[in-house]
Length: 618
Image 1 (cartoon, helix red, strand yellow):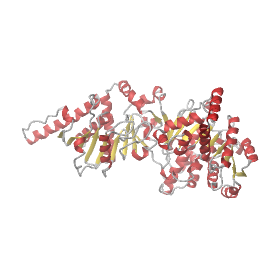
Image 2: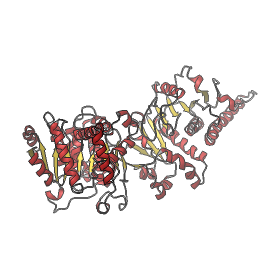
Image 3: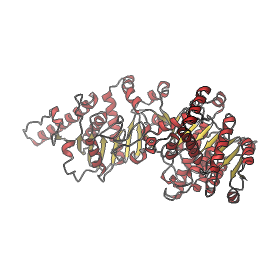
Image 4: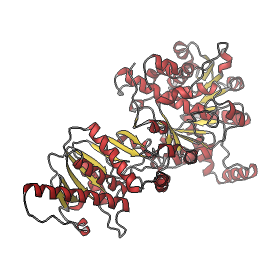
């Protein structure tokens, strides 16, 4: 089996320990000065470390590139770019063209960026003077005034570096020998689409058939959400500093980040301190965490009943495959007993595919008996939205509310659509809405459909229906969307998509805190921070029918084995995405990946010691 490489390249031991930690970009900007002060260095010294990290990454990945184009904005991102330009010329003898896009505000550049720009100009003038002296010329040394920053065709040239103003560069022919672009235009503070002058620069560098390396984050990508609302640099590599940011891993990030490199700039121990860990935005889970999240072996004396009794409900006419795949996924995950309630037409195909499953025709009697029998349940795969599915949801919802502590559940697909339509129908019925509001007020709850032991697994379209908003609204801030769904409907929300977001508004019970194998309070390697997680696994081959049904089965199978709903959702998502990545590695490509190709790899992932034996170094 092929190895799965890391999604984020770390530069040292501290970065490796920090790879599961994600902090908000705004928070990080607010503590940079404190971090520098704690290490007795200036912010300019920190900027030089950042520029050096980018320079090293460029030289390592593109050692033969001889003419770098470095774009520098008005903020500290641009300051990092000035450091890169100076190092490229001074340390590597490269030709460098620097394009400056300076703000017209009175405040100008931050002090450390101003210092970096001054250091670049000083180097250029020194080199120019040395060259003139070497040639024995008496020409006067070129003088550069600060006001030349605005509107001149060539601000300065010397020492292999040419500095140009962005406005004039836009109308010039790009040099044919430029073979690498370094993006230092916009940093982590952007919120919304870049202004027109920046958008034009971004479009131009994206049109070049050369590699692009982004400083900290591709210009135009929202560091908090991963949203892209205008032009955005399509980077081949992104070198990010100090902390990993949420927007590097979800929404549109994978289209623009390229290969991610992480360097904590020697602040790792400070970031690992408990005071900073309390400020984490979320955790990031990836392939390498499986062995830590499933560390136990089954008791040699365990029996099938000890591994849970799972009830799966779904499979309307024409959708039998969905419930079949969910059932097989649950079995592969290790559920002890799996019972399926479905249409009679699907019983024979299901038993042919999965003879280990118990299957019955779904009717009122079998539904009631199955709900009482099960220790956990999943509803939705292939359910449909006709009267059959709606009746099932009404009964399952009522039963789960009456047995909320006893029956953890997974809700997917049309179960979510019906749940959303029920909510919308009540919104449209003024009298019903009034009654609901009165009941909510009387019972001290915010939403009547809440179930605190439920896992909901919407894709963006289903999430939009649950929130009564547009898909664009969901994708604009996936973290906020997941949080709002969890607040309205309870339990855990798993918002599917590249960089799946998991969120819960529920607090673990004391017994779960002491028994949960992923408990953040008692484990030496706390990977599951309460409330929010990004699952940085999976690939574009998963954009095919049936993948969601398999995910439902995996999570339900773990839930049956008495994981908490938070652990089951997080670990199930990680198992599902890793299985897809292993399948792609085994079959040499993402195109043509099918849901059933994941099954053998699911078995591998829930037995992580087997991964090592098969030489899949995660």
